[in-house]
Image (cartoon, rainbow over the protein chains, first blue to last red):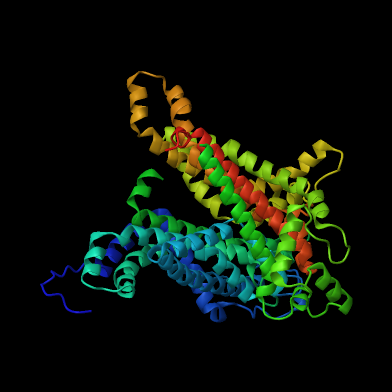
Length: 297
Length: 314
């Protein structure tokens, strides 16, 4: 781009330092937000360091020790082949986080691209994309997931694919709305009159303004992805064994709910902790980003 | 209003059409022979041949799509690969169970959630309000199948108050209702908190508006203001949400029916996924899409009818 013939006053907004310290201070002041942060950190810690902190090998079959109720030796008891459930739950957080973070990240990227195209591109493209988004919305999530699994088989890639298909429109719509709103704002018009092309405007001016809130929203969706994976694994249509998905633990425990109820308890607790943690944290973060919502909710 | 209704119905039909195309195309976007992919490597030559004929794989694709849509419009969803029974019949057999589950799950959520949200808004910062706020965030986030499993553990295994499996004796209404308690509880629990929050937020917004202040200035009594003027407008976002809720509940029933071993659409699909019976999966999923589109359509029309601004064509 050619240099402007006049001096444009450069206004730098100090972003990271100030904003972040203030956000963290506010977060620490909100008891539910703090609780959420701690729970999420705990899950992340388990996921990252699973191989070091599991007391037993989560895959080791130990038949003599099968169906042991919780004790000091096996904190959450053992299942029908003698797996230590506590170790499996910790290892399971890895699967949950991989599915959750990977698929949300891919959806954010796809949603950003589709949303910018719909918002900044020609009208007909916008209309076609909106119709596609509306159609995807009209499928009950689990139903479409099951249809795809019938054809592709149940594995990690299929689940990630289904989540990307479903979440992309959610983010694309947001990006589209913000792009449309910004498209005709004065600073974009000024930039355009200086001769900037579409790529520069999108990448340098529109993108930085929407990426922050988008990531917060994305992180709030991580638990629902984890829930979907666990649900499919509970139907034994998720990530195939021997991977100790939390849903898999629930599936195996459910047939033994009468004689070994601790197995389903072990499978459900990490799911509840994770979803609660992400939700409390997400609520807290959203309140900070959007003061209008804070007043009402 | 009429224009809006026509446009809205048109959009719903268009979405159904695209959804049919998507479901139809699904088999073909996957690289490789659709028959082998759909049936798996262990399928016999006989099954593969039957699948090819069933899906009309010997015809050109646009022709097949037209045939497929024509069949669906005539109420023919194809046949089960193995038993040869019509998919439409199979779906209709179990649909009442699923609808009963959704209606009762959503029903108790509405009956409890809306008054709770309303009360929280009117008595803001009261004990009930604070309690509802924390509980609702908690219940929204816990997956319904975990609630279901824990409900079975507590109320069926430990306390033995409610049955944990089945839909009850076919002719015994009371027994069926009795069997519906736990599934409906676990399916609806998350929605109680969600509805309460939405109603509360929208009530607070409406209560701050000018026409409510005017009503107060005229000396109208508070209950009349709340029910007659505020709730009537505040309920609109909730109606839209109820339409969208059907989609979530259709997803939720898959797990709930599996947990409680109830007959229903979810149970049917899961069983058919396991045996790779794609025509049945396709047909059933299409029915759920139809139900969902219908629910959101009805919700939007009801909102338009209730909302004087939309009714006036604004």
